[in-house]
Image 1 (cartoon, rainbow, N blue to C red):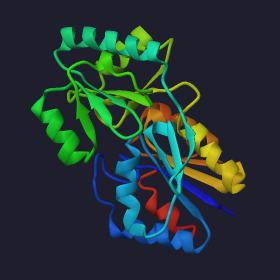
Image 2 (image 1 turned 30 degrees about the vertical axis):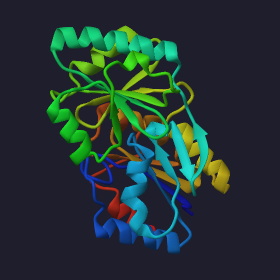
Image 3 (image 1 turned 45 degrees about the vertical axis):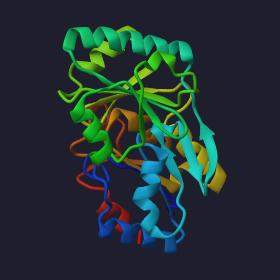
Image 4 (image 1 turned 180 degrees about the horizontal axis):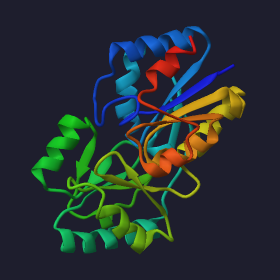
Length: 260
């Protein structure tokens, strides 16, 4: 019997950067809840952003935020991951080089309650505020941030075709570089990813691997897909994600509704 359903958001349960959850999805999660099946939203997004999306449910669900660097249930932080400050400096060094070559590259450094960014680009600022509804603090110098960094990520509106190989070559031996949605790469903190967070939830709720199913579409979902008993990857997903899939599907919703 399935007891836990974990789903990525952007490109999986929702369209990329969608800021409302369709009623049919709310109704399905509520029906799962009534049947005793736990649903967890797993995303690279901020915790505050994900919590706002699912607040209309009217009951608490576990959240896997920041690609697993924050795992929260009922306001209790169950797990956190931090990126070493030395690694952050190396990411920023590579970013400065990327900007010189490609004349773009918008970085966010995630701490507990905000993102820090040094971007002055109007399109990016508007996108973060009005599309992503993220809490962002804009600063002139990211090197000056002294708070513990949960996650670093870089956006290039031209896509990830330059981003991923560029940063993988320069820093891939120090930290994992993964695609996230259409034009982001994320740097996964050591010992913290969606998979480790999902395992924390399974342990907390006493759920076995075979009692958990998972949905994803990108490289940042791979550890989570492997951690679940059954892995579903979207037909539009990344080829590397599809390699670890048990099934390739068009949408999570029919599978979730099939559990009812």
